[in-house]
Image (cartoon, rainbow over all chains, first blue to last red; front, top):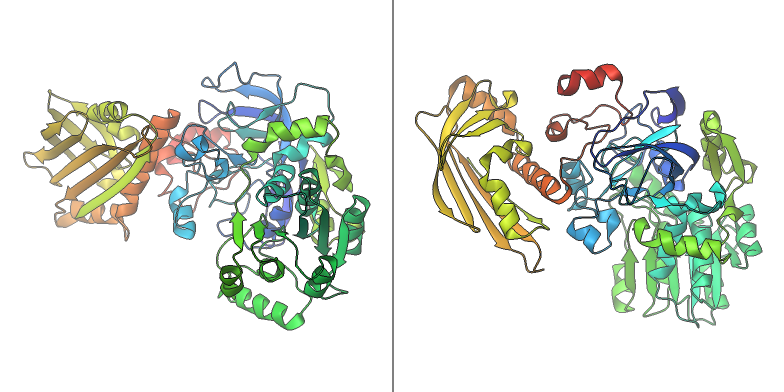
Length: 391
Length: 180
């Protein structure tokens, strides 16, 4: 089959690889009908996530048709011919974390848990196409994928809703939604979202759906801010204004009640010397992540507010504003999304027209053009916001 | 050398105890074991895997047993690598899970076998036992050891690192199995 693979830093390559096969009893093989490039794939391509290997099949946002099931798959839950969206974290459904609906922390699905434990203290779930640290599972930017615990995670789509309406239930829509949900939004809340990429856009839409009074989008790309503005959110361009001052203006001096970091470890910063400081430390591996957005969110949030982190961090950050966090009674909440928890309710919101996930799609390309898709997305060319690939 | 490790398994004590008490189950999750054969009510014959030292075998006897709580065993006769182990099963505070606490003692000899064993355990010997318990948890909670494309051979995952790429196995690789 054809598959998009990691070919070293700053390089992806669509290659011929073997077709997947059943390796565990509860696996299914899915023929992929739609897949996407995620912002977090850029962290892999940019070389910030360790344990990638040449030839790793990338991609963790995909859906398609079940073409084969292992002998252990519960036929009441999944059969050949079912149309499914596959959540990016692989969850067993049986461990303590899964029982607590903390699916992205599943205790059983990462065969390389020992390595993850060294980095994170405790291991995390397996993830499709996301390094060997999260299991070494081949991803979904391909014609077919092997899906372990196929009768636990995948969401069956039983209506004739288009792929593009439901594809993002695999990751970015639930991720954005969880970012907003962790904010415990009240009707009077002003919610500021750092990052107007795909996850940020969905965090904004979710904050509004959950009842926020005002939603602010912070980014530097005019086209991304315009996209947020068209959806009814208030844009703040950090290349043009001082973010803290602007946020104070927009909130009568209080600061946003809730702040969402939808940027993560590769933040860019309006202040050249702070950006340089972090880039240099990151380059010499004295700091693995560049946490500008997180720092600014903590400094900007009103006292007693919530800072919700859904941007990806991988290791250690420097200059964490612990004083602001502690003295101003902030709550910091975070997590890789527990996608399985949100798929069904969000499918309902899509079907009722409360959220339109297709509004962020700017590019549709054949799988064989994945390399170009990564170029466009990484370099923000051609007003690229979200690339959907068709195998 | 003494190693200890612990894990929590979301299954009742009776089930976890019964699985371990059937010593023939141990090779499904313990990386250094090829086979354990029950030879009597309390006696068994153990065969180690190649990385642990080729053709290392020994007999063992359960000497200390409290059903549902504890199993203690040790090698008997002139074992190449004299060893002993104790495993305790404790109800977890959540009321549904079982804490498994294991302790193993190896009397590592000199010579080739001693070297092979030392090499097998490497610089961080407790990790092997941690991984063994992770697999025990996988087997009891999900039915089998979880495999990925990067680590397709189950209990060899640690020694396979760095791994084959995370892409599907070719027919030839699959046919060759763990030796590929």
